[in-house]
Length: 447
Image (cartoon, one colour):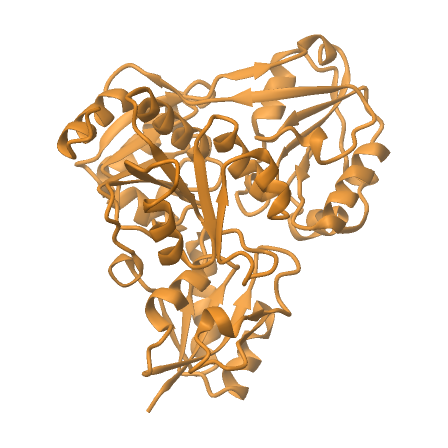
């Protein structure tokens, strides 16, 4: 007898779990996906072309997570597979209770059943929470490897919020590719920093198909770098696993799923932001990591800020715009933009909440603890328009932009603006250069 399954997701890990474990598996019938975290991604279908037309000729519907109890009963569901990330343990078990109370089993799939092996050496970068500094860690790793003459192809954790068939395999080598693939602001924030540095990045929906294309990339490929998202563990089997932890949120490394999985499985853990965290919090993170993964190499890191026009901050009323997911499900109360504004003597941080419109107002309702800063939400054209209008409405002297991309290329900003940048800086030893020297030797990659 086939088991009926619902995959509980957020347009990322859920599709990967389906592709690697359930697609073509005659023992299961996936009757639905549910969607959370990302706005406006329910109401679609996982298309038959990706699901496998023999078993799923009509595709698989995607419902809102709030419908889960009803779906379990109406569709006679046996198993519900939790498949998204950056979630506190109480919330995971709350969902387990919802599922069990409706009569179904609550399951978590692990690395052995979901990781894909590569023909190339793989370095995976993950984090214990969204907003730890994983992206700049990935960029630093690529920089070191490129200096050694190696061709590095990055593969990014999925963000397929549009046409899933069209997004099956995506390759980004230029800024123009971002427009061609109709990227959201969130996607651009992850892809653009790679392509402007001269390396190729892939993403999409079918991560085995993506890996095979990346391995034979026309620009060459010596190393695959998995650039993970949220606090998920890798889709690819790593030869070197590097995690990033955040001492501004001590304790999160052992209280969020699957961030603790990342903390436990990493060969190397970068404790980032030690330039802005308290010694007490840094030591708390060190102690937690030593407890769950005593064999990990610990690298101390900082994320020093650069500000292109500090004179536009001092004494001014500023609106700070930060990376969206870091503030929403990442739950950060301050980011690089706030730190830069305070460091350079802003007269006032303007609260955008009275001036939000549309989807931005909804974001603040869903995440009421964001505070006095504006998340750069841009999952679709409507959100981009609402972001633009909110910035226009907010009475301020300067807009401080701390997103990883040039936001003014996407959103018209009719006020003076300041760009905040940040990169990983390792402090002392051990450091990534030494660790990657050993990796290159071990895999005979010396050029």
